[in-house]
Length: 257
Image (cartoon, rainbow, N blue to C red; front, side, top):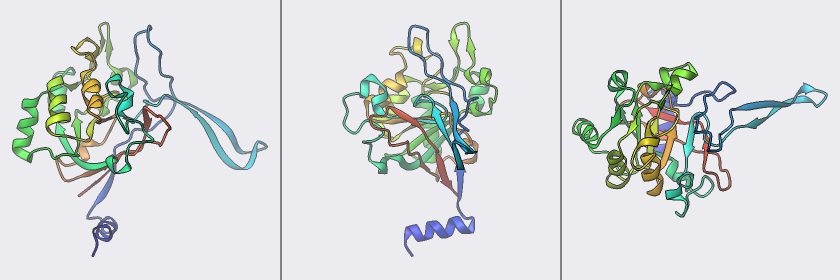
């Protein structure tokens, strides 16, 4: 029996299940805020073209307006200046095989409950690896923080007088994952793959800078990571094939025992 036939049989029999790691995308979806000197990304607007009416009596469809990096979304290398000159760096040129990989889920939810500015470090990665084995090349590393439990937009963005506060990656951890572990990319439950205070880091927004400079990807605003085991799941995260696209909302799914 082939691997694909076995996969279909296991899904039908319930030995494997599909977990949706995607937040709903709509007008209430939170959008990242930037200082006023920078251009802002719009929120989601859904406008009806026709809905079984005189504009189209038998069909319903909409016009959608949103930024590429809205809701559960994909970050391509061209999204950041460090990745702008790489080959196959945009949504339409990345080989499709690179959207699929094993998931390594690092659970730091308790740490984040105690400290919303928690940063993943190489030492914490090595502690995880001591229990679950070394992160393999081509893996999606997913940071489970519990942040997706924050349903209120203000709590999700968590903006204070000194800017947003949310967990992320220490620069040394991003370097370790991108260079030493050769991952596909990282995924987070927060609005972006850098910590809320990352604008003040050196360099600013280190995870974006390091990951995309190494040709790696980012997944943001994930959910249901608590339904995945530390290892053993496979994640499929395929963005829209936008010509020259720096990113895209997408439906992220995991196949897991």
